[in-house]
Length: 198
Image (cartoon, rainbow, N blue to C red; front, side):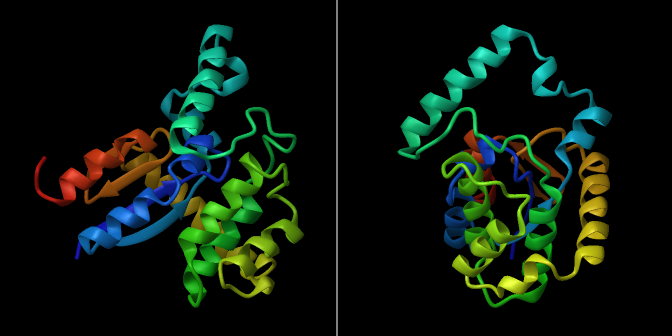
């Protein structure tokens, strides 16, 4: 069985716009998905990425236009300037790590719920109540919002170091072995790779 490691940032609008594309591809190809929430700010700082506020105004303007068009193409609602963005992604990331370890729910639905909370619902994913609501909606125990914080923090740090070691520099990033696919618009490449076409 192929194994897809998904390096995901819960602050990324492009992770939001990826929707359930990864899960649909994995199901069709009989692949396993391993969710690896990581610290995108630290990865940017260590791999030459430019934080959004430091980008030239033309690049910032294009990003907004691209998000608007991409959301329209996907038929997904989006708030281009969310009230609670940026926020601290760590608590929600720890919850995803805890939920994946606990089982019993749908990790993909949890990640999508947290991303939608930020990018479509004007909710703060750093708040325990928001995280707990997303956990419950995805079939997990609400108590995971506050459980396993130390283990979650350790795994989050490991995921970040692993991302840098393996060449990840942005998100969404999908790794199959050492083959890296970056961007929600490269899911078709990932599928082709799993099918043996590339």
